[in-house]
Amino acid sequence: MVSPVAKNLKITLLAGGVGGAKAAEGLAASQYASVTTIIGNIADDDEFHGLWVSPDIDTLIYSLGDQIDREQGWGRKNETHQVLNELNALGENTWMTLGDLDLATHIYRTSQKAKGVTASEITTTLAKRHGVTLPILLPTNDVVQTRVKTLAGWLSFQEFFVREHCKPDVLDIEYKGAADSVATPEALEQIAKSDIVLIAPSNPIVSIGAILAVPEIQQAIEKSNAYVIAVSPLIGGKTIKGPADKMLESAGKSIDSKGVYQCYEHFLNALVIDDLDQSDAAWLEGQGADVLVTPTLMKTVEEKSNLLSKVVHFALTQRAKGEKK
Image 1 (cartoon, rainbow, N blue to C red):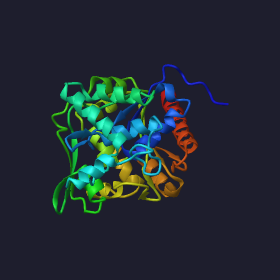
Image 2 (image 1 turned 90 degrees about the vertical axis):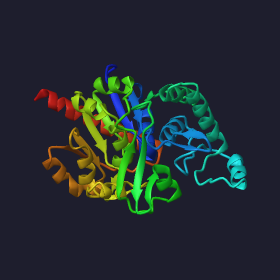
Image 3 (image 1 turned 90 degrees about the horizontal axis):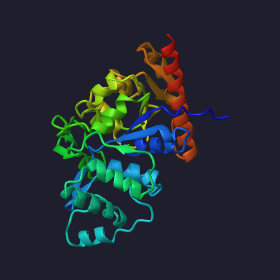
């Protein structure tokens, strides 16, 4: 029997990339859906064909609205590419795949931005359009963009990730515009009142790291009374998808659970690791972290819901133990 969820419980999910979307879907399908709010990554945003594209936020919206292309993990299902094909015929660079349905989202976002509508308001409207019920907040309404330094120079994250297929060696990472950005009051308020801050199995450097790079966001987590728990994106010391391993290495961290922990060590209470990484548990516990060892691969809705339910239950249990001490 599933125990009832306290109405005053507040869970905040920090999410980026496909791993973030999977975690969001898991919470949405769980008993904790009504008490969950998401803070998404906006630092992968970029301009294509004069349109402002926000890949991580759109992946969240499409996933939660059951509009995602499940095979790819991004983009809309039942998509066509007539506009992109025509642009290609006209000699435009079309390495960033934007489908016809997807383009409607980017056209709307760009036109609203031109009218002075904030990115947060645009996100709320798009989420409502797709029937998303979990609130999606942005860490900032300002433009923050992840850039990757390679032997060929600095690349935007989309150039590195999509055009170059993550092949170049990563020499450095920067979050352009982060230092001058202002955190949204909604995100800061949500963190401050959270009982649990759950970090999705997203790239610690370019997905979660970009959110934390917005001034006051990490400080808000550190000041809060929330129990902070992260799900490692690594299984058997390897990434399921994306360049998290390269990014960890570039940051001087080991490509394992220890490296993931080190990204969050200043405020982390617990780390969730896969069964294949169980050998790291003793080291993590030696650092003072609570550790949940469980299968973390998420393919089906049931797997997503089961994992996230287990993670939240573990966090609530450990938090209660701490309050009794």
